[in-house]
Length: 189
Image (cartoon, rainbow, N blue to C red; front, top):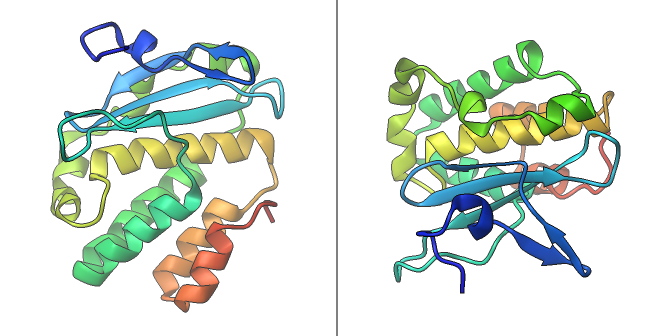
């Protein structure tokens, strides 16, 4: 059985349809989350995103696939506790979407270092630290996950607007049905 004491790449390696998936890059986000990215199949620069989470019993979860619905529900929980700060956090995500995220090439994908993507200044992390008290995900994990989901969307669907639409619906306080429906759409619009 793989344990965390082994190297992180081995810990995050898995089999899918008789194919061994070895991560391009892995990062221990904090004591509770390990995140890895892999080569995907939707296009030449596609990435798969997977993570493990430390469970309450101290063991690590199976390797999981994050979905938009997961972070959306987490944001809704955070918003119910700290609405103003959560909306500022969404503004930070939108700023990333608009200014920092571009489609990548296969070469760029193969050279991604998750530590560099998580390179947020301490001021930003401290500003949103309070939100880590609510929901399932801490701010550091959410920032990295959001950047990766944005990269994935920009690369595979350059004209896609799912992430942008979802952030806007969350900020505008759309009804929960509309928000969750957007988060679970299969096709990017």
